Each structure stands twice: as structure tokens, then as C-alpha cells.
Image (cartoon, rainbow, N blue to C red; front, side, top):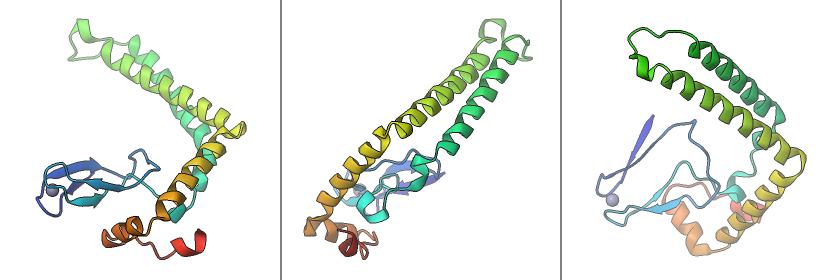
Length: 159
Ligand SMILES: [Zn+2]
């Protein structure tokens, strides 16, 4: 877990880690307290970093589905077990959470594979890439990124 603080007023801006959901939009954000600009590390400019190949990896989503099945299986197993130290009226809670999470992984994995196979995901990323390229045509925006420590040296070649 990493915690990001405002460089100016030290307000806590966010907690994040490497597993945080990646967002493909402008990473430039403004501190709500003092108005200082900062980079949201969860956000990525596709036209600088390129479209990551793993978003189109069917294999990684098959792994996600398998993970979901294992969770589902474990949750159903726990549903029939008496958990020690848990009051009778909340016995169902933990297995239900595990089952729900497993089901979300399975459904999400299947939806991702469908969107990869049908080309919908590629279209979506192309759209995000174009939007990123449009942002980077603005010299003021690029200099804000540079001042905030983003490596913008490769932009010129790609646009
Ligand atoms: Zn601040």
C-alpha cells in the first residue's frame, strides 16, 4: 500500500497499490484543499505509455475465471461448515462474501474475453488512445505533465 500526500499542504490524497484498477485518462489532478496539481499514479496516458498488451491477454482472464471458480467452490464448502467463534446468525456472511466475489471474477472474466474476441475492447482502447493523443497536442498540458515529473520525451515521435 502506498499513500500519496499533497506536496504542498501534506493533505492525504489517496492510498493505492500496484493492484489498483488502472484508469486510462488524464493523471493530472488538483488537491481539493490547496489547489496544487499532482499526478494520480492510477491514471495512465495511453499515447505516452502505449496500449498495454496484457489487456488483450485471454490467458490472464482465464486465470481470473479459474480463481473465481476456486473461490465459489470454497464458499459453497464453507456454507455447509460451522465456523468456530462466529455467531449462528452471521454464519452465512463469510461464505456469501466469498461466493459473491468468486461469481464476480467469473462473470467479469467471461465478459472480458467476449469483449476481446468481438473486438469491442480494441475499439474502446483505440478511442481512449485517440483521446489521450488529443490531450497531448496541447503544449500547456504537456508542460504541466513534464513539471510534475512525467517522462514526456517520447511523445513527439508517437504523435
Ligand atoms: Zn494540497
